[in-house]
Image 1 (spheres, rainbow, N blue to C red):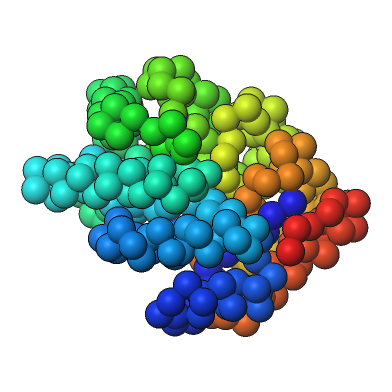
Image 2 (image 1 turned 60 degrees about the horizontal axis):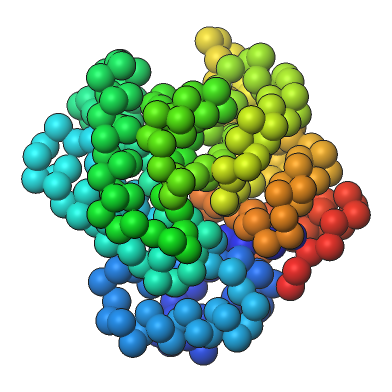
Length: 280
């Protein structure tokens, strides 16, 4: 199994970067540069990762490709295409974004229009346009599931895969983002197992987080660091390992270096309890 996450410390060269990666015992990493980096810099980081048996798991986009603002949407689409091209060049497992918010408010916010059928059709067109512009052979474009936009369930993700109908469209699995109801919370292992059952052939990268629910009205479910909630990672990690030992599992949304070290160590220890060999 490969475990990774953010670094949260500065670096200015591949040598400084890989030293931090090794200190954190990561064997999977987020892409250390973006598409604006010079070609020779991108090459040096890619070669450094290869020499040290580190998998570049994700190239992020994190832009609103469904924005109502035409300029913002066009810029987001251009950036998504450039980042997918970067993922192809770096040999990354996937390039990942969210679908985006078609309504008012933050780029990753909730809106009733996010669930409209014509929004689903726009997502299909958007994904196709990005993939068709790059035509990747070595990587995949993916959308991270969210609680309030498509895809918000494994069934909806599978529907989207069939609608997009592109071999280069795959799954970035964040099951915690979909644990948005008490039913899924109390049957978390059943829900997560179903995610892997339905989406397993398409999964290229996984986020490992945790959840805890308040005893308060109406329903309040918090994302927390792995080990601080209710998820049983000795049962979850074998599902990830079954996809292949190089599938990256990333901890995320943590404030600092120490938190990332703690979270990665927790995932590593649970993998070892489950009899899984951890690379790195």
